Image (cartoon, rainbow over the protein chains, first blue to last red):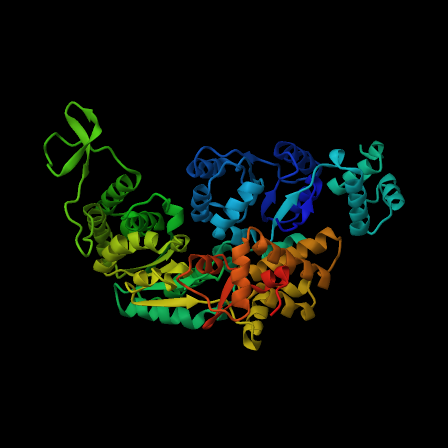
Amino acid sequence: MTSLESFSPSDLASILDEDPPFIALLVHDVAEETFLKDLSYALDLIPNSTSLILTKPSESVRGLIAEMAKSAPQFYCIANLNEFTSTQFEELDKARSQFVAERIALLVLNEVAMHRFLSSAPNLLSFIGAKIYSALPDIWTLTTEQKSNRLSNLRSSFGMSDEELVGSVEESKIDLSPSVVDWLILLDRGDLIP
Amino acid sequence: MYRAFLRRFNPAQTPDAAMSSELVEDALSTERIRNLMAAMLLRPGSQHLLVGGIGSGKSTELRLLTQTILHAKVGEFPLYLDVSQHADLNRSQPGAILLAIGRALRLSGDVALVSSDEAQESFSKIEALASGYWDWVPPNSYDDREPSEEEIMGFSHVHRKGLITPPVNPILASVESISVLLAKLIQMLSTQGKELVVVLDGMDRLLDPLAYWDFVDQDFAALRKLKISIVSAAPLSLLYSKGRIVLDHFDSFHHIPPIGLDKSGLELLKRLLTKREIGELVHPSLLDQICIGSGGVLRDLISIVQDAAQNAYIDSCDWIDQIHVDRAVLQLGNAYKLGLSGQERVRLQHIHRGGAFSPASKQDLELLLHRRLLERGESYSIHPALLEALKVKK
């Protein structure tokens, strides 16, 4: 599958907090349940953020639509779609109007389900546009190489060295966003997290 | 800063929300809307299609048409409804559109209807037909019906079995009965000087022309008899192959192609971006690249700006830069590239190098419906963002 932008739970939480997107998330190397739990924790770190509501699909698309109607007004996450058939994705596609645009929707799919979704739901895909991301494992389970890459990305996106970051946190000059928390944990400076 | 900007560039925003925030560029469709309005009003009962690819702006145009008719104050009663919000298009049967119109009339809260007992009775019957009701039939009352397994005290649910299939399907009894109820409501509006015209959105989700035909054959035929003019959204597939048969039923069809990427097309796309105050975060020198990357598909245009803004936000920049736009176009291209089979890649390369598009080929048609291919007048081209991701050379 084409290389996708990858996000850790904390990065994704920041994106979800900033705008009302419609996102499809590919989980392959990552356990779906663990990722969603970490995402929920990361969202808790953001003041006034929306909380993660997991919409568990029922057996049918109609059941899923009914579940969505009952979920929180601002955010819903549809997980456990991996058993959905192409026909079910087609049905979901025809019901696009039920996905109210002002709410945030996150569809979580494994590789097989993503393939079915891509070939069966052009109307929903048009809402999603380029926002098909792949899930990165949480920082506790990263390999040494992945940790090094993550640190390098954090340094470049914040334009800071590790020392500058630690200094900023110690002097309370920077908010403890989920990405900053990740950074501190990677530096083994979890003691700075209140 | 980013939050407000991103709200103006939300590809999933409803046309209503975009219009109320004055984010829609009316000039994109003024002439087509004027023509449609004239055709609907001058020829009661006429039927028209607005055909376009996904994200081409059909819903916005249908909303603008409704508003234009309303503001024209010529006595018409324009009713906009998204059929897919009223009916599950996967399971609905002929008659569903008529029932949806009946429900929408009730929800319109029109005084002439709300205050009439006769209208309320029609609404109740429409609701019963829409939601379903129990109907027990005594034994041996209809010989041409097949009894069901369910039977209580000799009464059973039955199913009428057709003996012959006529060349042209008559309007089904169930559809006819809804049509009678609607006729009463329309008459009540008419005595108040309000002539109903209907704008149907959501019908473009029926990508398969045969599924579309089920409703054309019954509901649209009944609406024609009722002399209600309609404009309905339709998928691009109606322009090709089996879809042409459906098209023949309509008085006119209006195709919304992607906006051209020539000088005037780019100017039009830039006006749309300017209306959404893109200048707050994007330098004018980047606008051409954004417009070209979108392929002229309106929703993709909005999507690229949203993704570029998100990239800039993640990079903690105060400004959307060249690199953020580059990445956003590539991200969109990668999304189109996902799930592309080897055979589809070969077809795309063939068409890119001047090979013919074959409307009879299911594969070619799917590439078009999924917007990997875009119509350009008489020819077809790969979506520019996908081209970027595939790095195909002539």
